Image 1 (cartoon, rainbow, N blue to C red):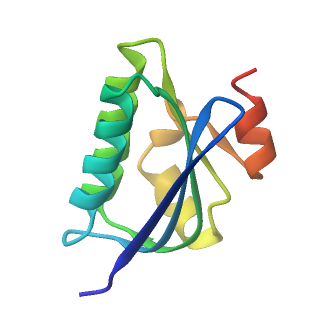
Image 2 (cartoon, rainbow, N blue to C red; image 1 turned 120 degrees about the vertical axis):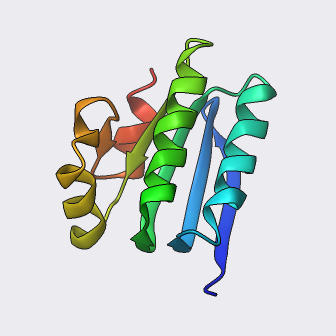
Amino acid sequence: MFPIKIEMKEIDNVSFFKISGRIDQQTYYDLRDKLRACIAAGKNKIVVDLANVDVVSGGGWNTIANDRDYAAKSNGDIKLCCMNEKVSAIFKSMDLIEFINTYNTVDEAINSFK
């Protein structure tokens, strides 16, 4: 099993998650739990930095999509940034680009909430 590292901090009233490792069948629960706790605490403007993520499994994408819907119910959103080519290609092939916003940089993603 490959570990996942999840760092979270607040930037301009946006919850910023920096993920490292793999979001796969063994680790996506960790991400889901942290995203849901954040949203439940009323912090529903979220940016997830995927620059240091090697793999996102179907369960990982499902978690991000479902939690994005959860955030949207309270007028929030989850936005992704800094995906590498491999992760981006899979994201696009799953047609998630239709309802999850992506950005090239952290600053672009954070500023999109302003």
